[in-house]
Image (cartoon, rainbow, N blue to C red):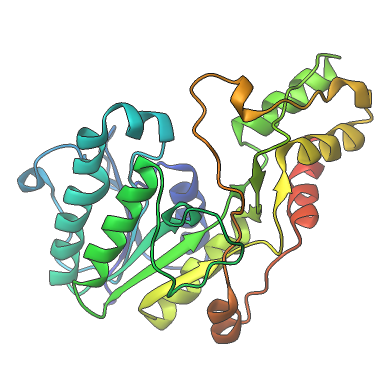
Length: 286
């Protein structure tokens, strides 16, 4: 009997979607949650001591979606969030590897400083913020554990239930202005494409660093303009501002794109245009 897949952070946005997709394909899936426990959701809190974690005896592919992803939270408590994002993540990965798992770790373009577009997978890491430093350190530690680890670096993953987009749609429909950043960019990726990449890497047990990215960056203000037109709202309701005008916002990278050529060549997963990714999401918000 095949070992189950394990989704650590199964109640996260990405974890829920991946679990549903794997189950619909007939795979046995277990998930963890720091909130609840059930036959399908093991209790696992990465903030707790590793000795408290109950894990299956055998695991096929393990997806590590549990982390502190808030940039503000990482800045405010760098050591506390590092314990979750780095120290305990590495401890968990080692225990999963000991159970025969192939470990997949989601990472980010923020392991780079963003001064250059389309950063190559083998380029030196150059994070500027705390969250990026956590991801860079975790990547290095995980890859040092052996050949059964894959890191998938992603640009901005988008879906119709992203709070920023739903808030824009709500306000525009109500005739209220929105204030997107004109000097912050993203390279948006549909959630379904990212999950396809994870599944391809898991099935092939393909180790190393992989990257997935949209074809280009797009300013948030331009994205809000796309949504405004799709909703038929007054274009004057989109009022761009600078990230510097919003207290507490971390200086964004100039570029967020990554070089996705390795993933494209190995699995035929092509990069979408930024506008196509957004239109796919915004269609469901109309």
